Image: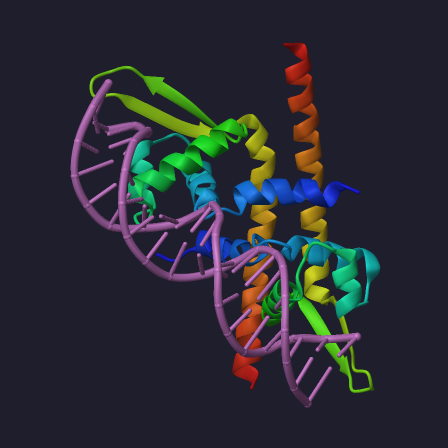
Length: 111
Length: 111
DNA sequence: CCGTATCCTAGCAGATACTG
DNA sequence: CAGTATCTGCTAGGATACGG
């Protein structure tokens, strides 16, 4: 009885978490980003959560992490190849939402 | 500064909630479904939560509700036209996940 | 600079019981 | 039948402070 829907639920549990999408989106548009840079790009996020999300995303193979053992240390995050395909899907989702919000506005104005 | 990403996050907050996808999926495959029918299709869900989710989904225009004032009362839920487009996106997402899980398995077996 | 450890809090999930 | 009301955990998220 555990069919495909459950799998979607799995990924949703990762992507559905707060900030996951913000992170992916920022990596998508900025390419390679450092930890604090990311934090500046998403000002409302806390280090704790950003760290957690990145760890999860890395574990799931959605984000790759590169450590440069310099002083001070430098860590760079980017999307993996696998995530590139996801990008297009997210893009579609985005379009869908925008279209839908526009219609929403029209409906309200029409009243 | 509230650009498109924020909108995606919005929708994710709805869809990302527990059971939302299960509900949409069931409506997708069964077409028109009554409250208790839905509850039977998702046995682990409670009335409280099902009711909440349906309300949220309805508010967001993802689900339509039709009330037949019979006795006993009959209420039917179904997807809206707008949600149909979403279906295809979710389907793609599903494919992506499955593909990705297969690769995952292969990697583990290759060890 | 890049995080982890700690503690605190809000809100969600679920069980149960009850109404039009 | 189709819900709402209420109560109780629980845990994800957030603020803060500190360490490699």
